Image 1 (cartoon, one colour):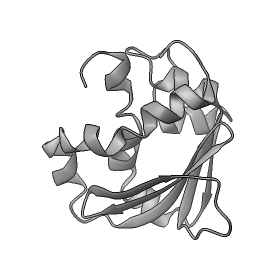
Image 2 (cartoon, one colour):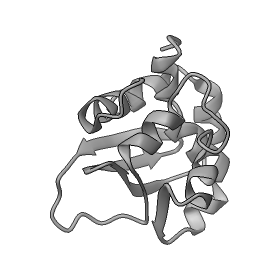
Image 3 (cartoon, one colour):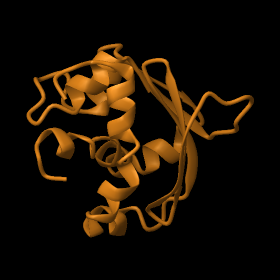
Image 4 (cartoon, helix red, strand yellow):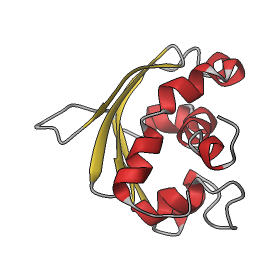
Length: 134
């Protein structure tokens, strides 16, 4: 995952449901989390629905007026650096990206903050592809 190409990163993100199914501990931690949210990887939007800790829908946009509770958007570079096998300091997690201005969090942040570690770990799963642990 050394390239910061939107399409390659989006293809890695599309493997999220399969990556999650291989992580029963993460599914268990998200057992009470249900939300529809948007993820932006560079210019490519995604619609994600999590039901009881599992990704029940992951759809690649563009969309017209698709509803969501919250959105997480970042540049392709930010996602690419986050998904490195061992990310550099400041690129290692979603909170660090947002704090440094490389990612934006929008909408109703309550469900995100109430389940922050689950969402951070979920959105970091494509790192396993780069690390060869898929």
